[in-house]
Image (cartoon, rainbow, N blue to C red; front, side):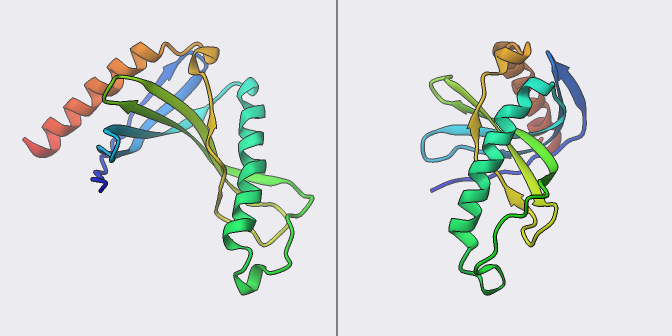
Length: 154
C-alpha cells in the first residue's frame, strides 16, 4: 500500500544547466521504500531535447493504447503539426538503500489534433550530463524536505 503526501513550495534554483522550480509533489514511501520527487523544469539545455522527444513519441503510443477506445478518439491519429510541450518534469526517486534514479518526462498537446493533456513516458536521464551533482541535489532536497515537514507539521 502506498502512502502519499503532497508538499508544495515555491522557489527556483539552478543545478548545472537545468533550472528547477521547487513547486513539486512528493510521493512518500511507496511499497519499495522510495521517496519520489517530481520537480518542474523551468529551463534546460538543448541537448536534453532528444530525450524529451523520445519520451513524447513513446507517450503518444501509450496514449493511443490507453485511451484509443474512447468513442471520440476511435480512429484518430496524431497530426503532423507536432506537439506543444506544456511542461517538463524531472522525477527523482531515492530508495531507502540511498540509490537514486532520475528520469525526464513532458506533458504535451497535439498542435493540430484531438489529443490534449498527454503525458510522455519516463525516460532515464543522467543528470551529471547536465552538470548536476546528484549528491548536492540530494542534500538540497533533504534540507528542503526537512524544512517543509517542520513548517507544516511542527
